[in-house]
Image (cartoon, rainbow over all chains, first blue to last red):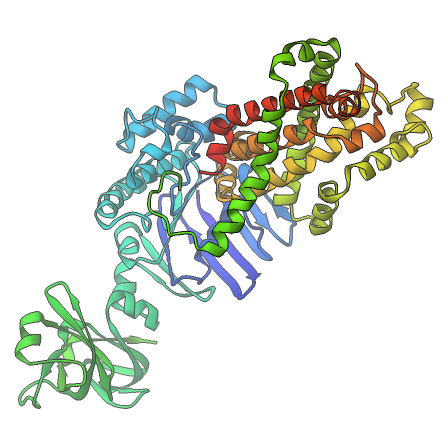
Length: 350
Length: 267
């Protein structure tokens, strides 16, 4: 069941133009900042919002085709959708919530109840079927919502920020379970999220959307290590520098030169991981070929390290240990020297 | 936030008018209770006319509420959910009976459904049906003035309900009608209940439109409010007795339904 979508939609300030392909069994994360149009894309795929132009086909069946004047209503599409807040029907029991999609499709009551019980057991909610949704915790409600979406064995599963309403601990466990269920699921899955961890943990492929456009697509590892926009770089925690390759160096568009380990030519990105940046109070001697003077403009604790934002000829982010931060007497406004080994800089074509 | 203990102190400029308002609303009812001829209440209430008027009032108000629910809930849905263009105008039109003097409503109904009226003449000629001055006319007059209360209440409940539940239902294979029955309606049930109570109370007390359109015939169109008004001119004690009955019925309804519907509608 392959999803083949090409969606064009204008709505207020949003101008959406996205092409998306999801193979059966594949999980594609649509990653992007708020207002990028991710949720709108899901609504179009679900049929809740007709596109201005474009085409949506699943497993060869056409769901939307604006030129062909086809718009399949949402209840005729084989989809399962999970929203940020579980949105279990408050007036139905958990079991009736899960059985809802079967009942609307004509499955007899008893059979629907058996199937619901089976799914509740699969998501770890066995025995809670008679409860009201209000009696469930956030994590339990989201599990029930997943069971409700999957019980009808849809061709396409749409997850709209399914973990972002959960507290940090619950998110970890629900994420792990979701990963397991997605691995067993035979249809295509589109996961909308603004959390890169969700995308990395759950998706086979990541599509980054900014302002209604796909700005980058690839495996989570690719996107993580070779960001193409500042937004992705920030998510991955990298400093992204754009410039022009010149032998074993990159002349940055913003001024400055970065020495790199491989030959590079033409327009390139140079990405620097924060942990590969070292800070000194005086200019260090010796091997590193990249030494820049910079001023510390911001510092935020980040686990056992402190993430330092540097302003200067080459804007960088550096992670130093809390001990080093204290020993060096670092504070916003302090002038420092930043060094990066040439081999620690990733260079790739723009 | 029922049961919250600590409140800010009420400033005097608010406290005095508020106290006056309470007195204004409660004193007339106290007066009614004080002046009630408690000893002769029994005989006054057992006269056949009273039972007749009370029964007619209860039946017609209940029928008017039923009609209002059957027609008003779908109308509220259209006002709250549909993307129809003239919605604002439509809402203004259907709420006119809220502000219209009921007598004017009665006159208007008479002009449409009377024997010379646009619809009334056709009904008479085609089916030999006459509406004015019948019990049917009482129900119609009461529905006319009371339905807007239900529509407004249900529309408010629909707007407050999370429309994403309906999206979920659609992705689960429910067409719009199934969604309405199995999701929307249960979600707004407290609002429908509250609206029905308001509607019923308004219908029970309806006077102007009823007397204009349905007249004042004991047994067929003389409801309790009409009986009270008439009695006041001949026998004030009987009027007080009848008023007490209406007051008791209203309070009983309020108490009976408060916990079940109103309490949930406004927690």
